[in-house]
Length: 83
Image 1 (tube, rainbow, N blue to C red):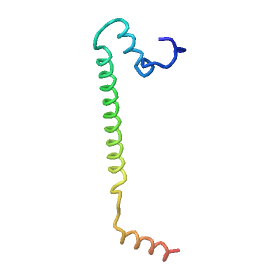
Image 2: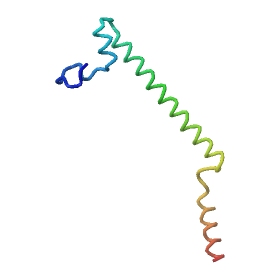
Image 3: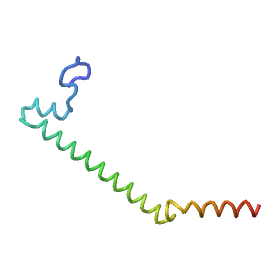
Image 4: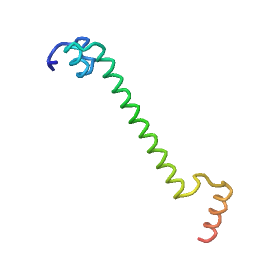
């Protein structure tokens, strides 16, 4: 598809979809779109797994993310007394 053609319905289609449609393979646009959608979902799944594993590793390395507020106040008071 030439880059300098005017706006048509073809402009919103994938180049692969257009090529297969012009060759004359019926239903090829749907198949290509399904493959692309599957690839995108796979990438999102991989990213979410990576984020979960990193968060788990950080939690395991640095301990709980929340501490007892009273303990934080006691530590701050102890520090201010020592100064």
